[in-house]
Length: 480
Ligand code: ADP
Image (cartoon, rainbow, N blue to C red; front, side):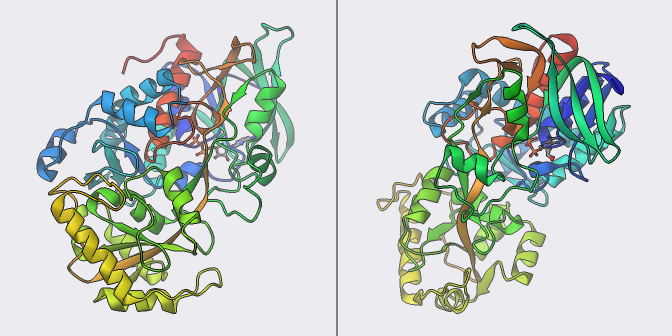
């Protein structure tokens, strides 16, 4: 061996940073590696939306916003239903109950959030917080700062290439091989190896093996390092995988390149405030309060390309989830269109090209759609698509200026991955725990079922990372 640590964490996203922090907190000599030149992975470029049924700032926020407080039971129920009952209720309970703990820890260490709690697609309780800039990097920064203040070692440009397990069916994982700029190195892990290597949405061969339709033609929101080899390496030492064919498309990515930029977060947080999605003709095509898989499929079946989010100034002012920088940068980059009337907005939409395509949306149709939707908001019911409308919370779109954001589905989250116990221990194909091997975050499978609700990813990754760090060192689980 070239190096020896108590705990070796692979991957520096939400899950790995939380795991390393909790391992050190529990007294372990800890190494965190990442193959990329920077920490953060997909976490860094995620939308910064975080579901938590309560928090230290919740009471004030609910009162100020006039919203009903949420419960853990409702969060669990929505998550299980949102994944068609295919999620693992033990793991869902873990992250739902752990979500406030981790959010409070971030807030105590300087995380700033927007003055809003929203109810995005598939959530029927107000529980989604948005970081101040609407990006996951806001949370990664806090996690990095906290880890830097410990004596954990961080090695970048260091790629895990193999996991070592002692012989026999009950053998222990004892360390890993890494590739560095100085060649291969062997790292011993006395107490545990924690895999936090993320998903495989950026690996066309691997994803299309499980879902043949997800060819190279379909864009992805993922960073280039989301290639899933952590899953394969774990399989080589006997680990089991589950639900590998459940792959989520993010319905609101940039139609020109598939990227989930800061602008693309607005359509996601917007449904409870009254954002309306229209197809290329200016007509609604889905219940905006629906899950990501439903919204993505509806867009693909809308008959045109792309679709659009439409909103007015009142949603910007009162919704509370759109940062000033998101709006101004979006307009500067021509990602957000602004106009004084809906007719003019339809004209601007039609004046643009989308991945080389042109469309022809008439102002008349767009106006008709929005006026009809305003009536639904007024009446508190949506006979067209059955959206749940909370009167007094959802806003009409009847005051300019008006805004539009083009959007299209892009490969986002791989719900499948390694099977783990509620203690984050990786299991073999017989369901037995592989001693010394733990996993947390997108590398794991079966947590969410067929479809992960938006804003559940950060609590899942961070809370399970936190659990893994403690279990590896002490054998006990945190009491959230
Ligand atoms: P999560 O949200 O589950 O924490 P992320 O995608 O944010 O997932 O983070 C996963 C991290 O793991 C990324 O920064 C990625 O570069 C890193 N990673 C993936 N595979 C390897 C590997 N083989 N060796 C080292 N780091 C890896």
